[in-house]
Length: 572
Image 1 (spheres, rainbow, N blue to C red):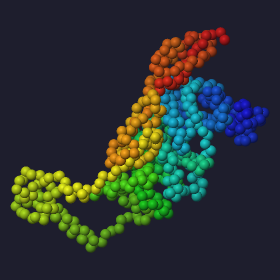
Image 2 (tube, helix red, strand yellow):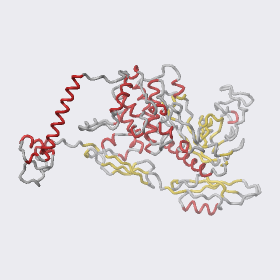
Image 3 (cartoon, rainbow, N blue to C red):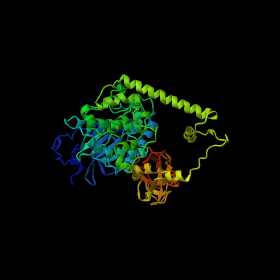
Image 4 (cartoon, rainbow, N blue to C red):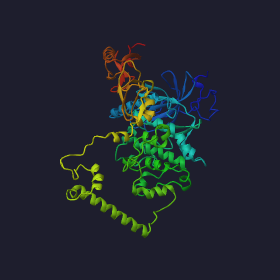
């Protein structure tokens, strides 16, 4: 195995140490990594070799890296908000600028939570595969797999790379399911664009570009500009908080790009003239519900948009996620996301079949007016009759028709009697039987299984509750309120209790305390404590805590190990 000093810091291939440039990629390894980035050749946790910086985002820097145990090439993402920190060339530890400590610590906690959550969702191949989350150098690192891919933005610049509707649905399904799982855990992307969706060498789509929530809200410390063709109106204007529907809009804008070859118009421009339209040749190839689904997901206003990723999945994959047929709508009911009358003109534009509405003929207008007058007159007479005319008139046929529709006696002898609502034997025979469904055995499922299978929400009043447990692992099911494999009426409440892991406790800040006091405080709270000795130049109090491996103020499971760096005695 080659010594890591003899590896190229860009491609991590073995090289001759005397070579000026890497023969594999042409990188000049003599270049010095500028501040505030980690020096090339640094090793994290005795295992991960740090190479060249390859990308930057609002909250982090990403380095090429290598796992020195497995010799796998990895990516190392370092929490590094450059507006808040200082680090000199060649230094490892981060120093926080004065008066920026609270913002830095808050972002650091959010960064750790984000990447730990992604690490727990490793079953979703569309998400970054996280190997480790490390607390070192007064910051946090996420070590992830190195993906052989190009961005969808670059892929779509090549000719003839649009996809038909069916292929788009197939390609985006893993990404949509992964987003639905993250949303169920309170994690949102809110920066989706064609630049952070990647086409892998395996031909599948992968989602990247994750940043902490503060990058969308904190103007001074983290703010980045949203991608104009993919960011919803509320994100560009900053007028209201972002929710799940913001990710729905953004991912379907990317879907729109793959389908048509061009992204939808900028939401800011659509505020002036909403000209969202599909090319005619594309529209003619779409199945009946496709245009309505696109339109519902790309609504300008979040109140009218498909609200959740689950709702989008229901629209795109109804037979897969809802095997039971949907009940027919009652008269007068309307689909929540059906097009409003004022949107009909836009629908025609999307269809690409007509630009305006056909003018009705004069004869048709006359017939419609006559029928309208007839219906209104009949309704008016029935209303007057059922209100008071029945006391002076008696029309048996009309009485029999109106009796079930009113609480009035309608020519009965006892005017205080209300018609009985008790069903007769005949009506009971005619009543439809309540549809029965089988209770699943949720004890065999994981939390991701529960949130990924939308049949639960269709067949039950489905709820998930969380409860800490010393014995049941996190995200495993503890219990359910209905007996598995029994039959119950459709719509019955099914409550599944999921383990939230071991009980958590807030980590106290023990920096500056003596190690003995810090040990007693943390162990009494349920933490395990590890001691790391630091060389003392004589200017520090022996036995005091200098740094903690975990962020104080956050909650951690009992039994979590926290490493304390302690000043040792002088003289060595």
